[in-house]
Image (cartoon, one colour):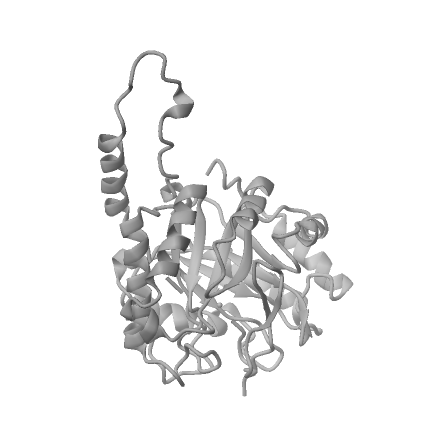
Length: 351
């Protein structure tokens, strides 16, 4: 038996969105691909060749085009990402600052949710970066079908979004249509096929490439397979050149998988059959209860033990269950002890 507690989503305007109508008890959960590293190298070289020549000795450095932000050092960091999704962030960073104070360590990833049709939230991305964190955007196509997106009918919006990413010129992780292997979202298995997802994902990525928006870390983000053991992941895979990170989504629920090995590794084994891209636990937390401190310890230690897992993002909300690190004194104490480990957290502005 599994359940999916309802996790609320926020747009740039701060409007509250209810994320899922269906609840699953084994794991909770939060996909997209990039230029390959070779492709990004080629693009950066081409940018250098096409830069406008100097008009004379009086031209200032400020007048020269700024090169695209190079996200490659962020793709496989030596230390682990220590991320958070928190109430109102990053429109306001109060909840992130409070999380950092209680955890004893600043998060270096801030995740938030953006509905299809929202503009690229440059202020939110800038807020995260100014704090010292990479923005992670879960881009949710609630109002448009995957087939429509793949057909090109949404290209004007996608191009505007990509141009805004390019203009801001800060790194950002983007996950399009996360949990696509589940049935609880409009883009999930009840209303779309794996082929629909792949075509839409690739199309968005290709439009970004055409616009020169190379600042994106593309995240392909399936839910853990436990609630849907018969839904195979490989048909949803867009291809090596389209993905930077595999953003696995899975929560420790009281009635579900209780260990890293049972919660995450069945999914990781499937994924490793077709790609070696690094894993990020893109959404996770532990349901309130006596087991929560041990779940937290298991999450930190399991992530630390695998070199191919580059970190996690903690869902620090009180929604359906109290997922926050402050849900009990033992929970907070354990989280702070584990977060103190030297492997977690680093300066994303100087990776």
